[in-house]
Image (tube, rainbow, N blue to C red; front, side, top):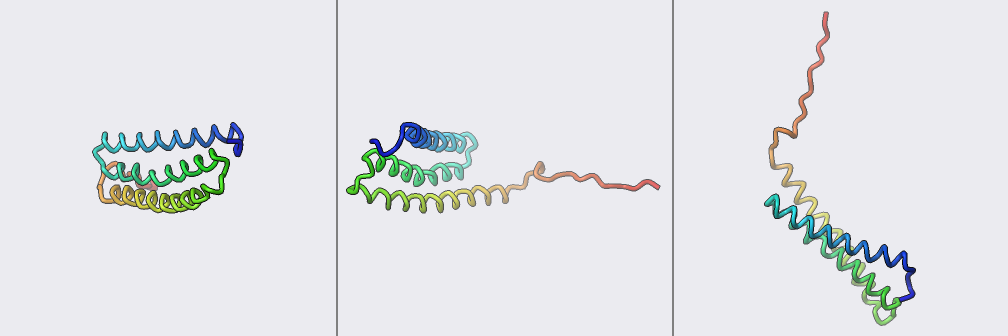
Length: 115
């Protein structure tokens, strides 16, 4: 387990914990708003979590050559995660475009010149 320094381990592990918390909070937000698109975003975050866990596992075992397949899995999950996050973001964005909200418009006062 000496492949990484203690501060680097703290960053790796706290990042994984943060990502798990973000997934959970986004899921809760979807429940509170009743908008399933936010659930989609939380599910779209899972491949990136798997990627991070692959990296931590590989480093935990001192970058063992027998576990080098984890590097390939990590890269694959990063690629898949980027696409799923993009798709979820587009899905949320499109849902906001279809909703007409009167507060989305900005009233611009007219400029009148006085004679």
